[in-house]
Length: 225
Image (cartoon, rainbow, N blue to C red; front, side):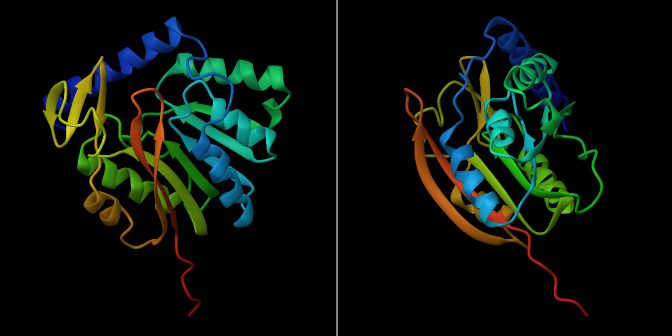
């Protein structure tokens, strides 16, 4: 990472931490639409354990736990994860939820092929360079079981905020204090190299509205020799 990229990453970490401190439960208690969809996909695939990256204060992680999955939830904000843990205790799902502070610019602290499914709602489109995103998806593939499913969402270049605010290069624009890496379709396709790309679905979220893709891809099962 360049010095400018490191500075942006640290600024974003501090911004999210202060935002969660100032606005506990900022996204509400109801799960996101993509999480509801992902739960059905994961269940159909026979998944039991879900790794959520960028879980924030936990509305989706708690939903997965209520749906009967065992959940490993990571985020780089200790404040968000503390809210998640309190929510799990209040909902009686603490036995199915574990949390870990983790920056996805670093290798995932998990062994190979150890989880059934991975979920990331708007995590890949944060202030990550293209190289960092590629490295993260490689790590996700490493920790997924063969046949495991990865569902993620990203804001794309058709979004109203694309090209607005402060430009940081690499299709990253900062608006209202939040930096976003806007995806084009070529990047989605590149990240699916070596996977089965099951679905790329457009949807909208929020008041702007934000325009996103929901992507589902599966790690292939290698034939036995």
